[in-house]
Length: 131
Image (cartoon, rainbow, N blue to C red; front, side, top):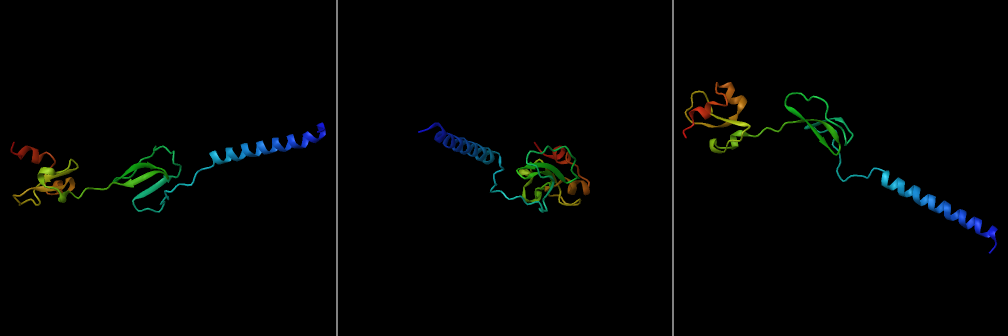
């Protein structure tokens, strides 16, 4: 083979190698489609930023808390426990043991707001609980 015959083959190989390198770079740098779909219209979550690597440097209104997930970050409603589903012996820390009404002698697990509204604070049960 003559030297002139080798030049087009070498040029073709160089172009092919460059094309493969470009395709590999695009493949590894292109965002992968996720199986998770982002629900930006959720009633429980309000997205402030849609960057999955965002930093929570904002305040959320009362009753919500900051969150970050694969779709972004924002504020979400705090899910409250249904305190009435627990007995006074198994009442979670976010609930309070108090009478179900101001005139009642029985006690039950209730929300802190409910107990406060009828005149009992979260230390009442601890002060009257028999050891």
